[in-house]
Length: 513
Image (tube, helix red, strand yellow):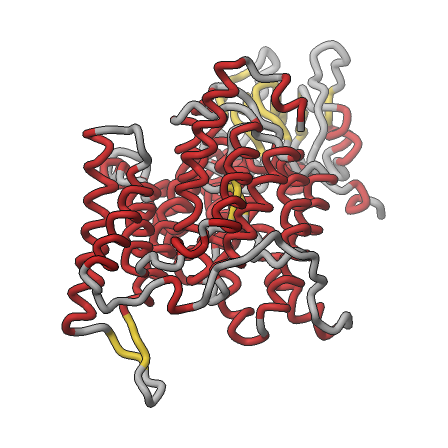
């Protein structure tokens, strides 16, 4: 803890402290709002924000990044809470943390580099849509019969009025002054108007009291058996994937903003430890927060101290400020979340339409849609797979050959481009064994044999020429390729000086007869 201070100059200590306070003030309404989305007590969200923020600031791999209860996790756990209860949520959060720790220990965090930018845009836009749709539930109310219907009359007018007022304050106050966070001002103003005019609208206190003390150690009260594991594991895995994806993408974003480099694997472990601890202290779990991290960076927070200060201030709000928080109207929180949606959504995506390749546009839209109707992990994984297939298809068309004649009258195919699973069909169509002369040379100097499919394609080509009774010569093939080739192995002309040295992506057991 003291090392956090010793490593900071006085200026950085001041910046980290002030930015931490700003972040803490912004965390309160969002933690409560995300708890409401997850159908849990607001204190569950606040405890998660405190523990996640504190531990990831100390143990995580990205100084200056803020973690807490998030909408991405909240929307995943709704079904678990409704169908099985909050104790199963705590068990899932503990298991979620263990999975994330395992990812960090196995050093899998580096694979976040495989996420292309169109997938990132789709991920962010999908997350914004999920948060927006979750807020619409607050415009519904149940009656005595248990039926749920949309608000109407004065209740709707008051709700909409508070939402609009909150959004206007958050949007326009920074143009006048940045001395006080606009989110805090919007909450205070909306709450004072509600109390002063005695408006009949729902508040945080109508759901449950958030008054509490320090988080208490509490093992999840669930049966420790295979049935519990069957219920909890799918949610825990999805939460772990969603949490890591959002955290590592946020880490990359903060890296760009600060022109420094974080540690993805350490962040995986830090997130995992924080979530496991959160689960046994009554928190709903969480991950890195894009909005709060950006607030922290732009407020001058660069070190771990900023995250620690934010968490400690948040705890002080829980211990002594709960009576005030309970007076916050739900409409104000919805307004805050709508502004989060506006700030999260990448509006530049619309300007990119028609300016970027069509496959990239379709991938971004697909990721956003899957995020809304499934979950973030499936959406991002699907986006990465689609991007990989598009990449493979585009590179498959690059293989071609320059055809010439050697001094002996033989035909020479000088290949260019990679030979791999997607390009083998184009590779086969280059050659004409029936009409070629008796002596044919295939030169791989400017090509590369990449995988099992490429090896099989070369063997198939050799068989085609052998059936025609013609001689085939293969030049500039790596030693590993020669080892893996069956039919064409003896056709390779070895040049120990010029032959390339590289490995082929193939399981050698496939070639053992």
